[in-house]
Image (cartoon, rainbow, N blue to C red; front, top):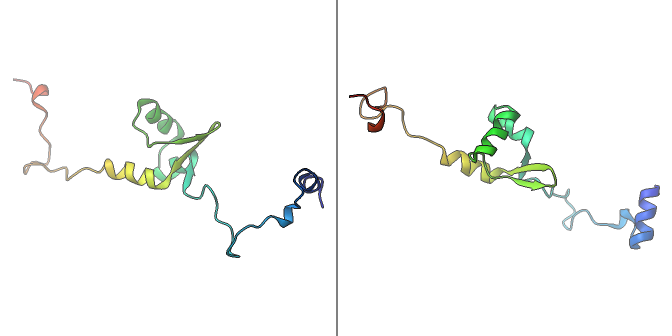
Length: 107
């Protein structure tokens, strides 16, 4: 038994090998399996770390969870964030170029 395991057993009265990993006998499920890191999300979205940090500062990034300094994003929340940003077809009213808002039209 290693020093860490011996210390754990002395402190808690349970050997680390006695701690069950799963009640079903299957491999234990990762506690944070539903989350991706900042770097993983950037890679999946095809954007730079700087872009995601900028989006976060502007309030347009997906909601995040912080554990200390570690930033995590829940996969289902990111999927909902992406779905909320879906847009309809670019062709509006038969024109390939959308018309400018009235406030921007020059007369």
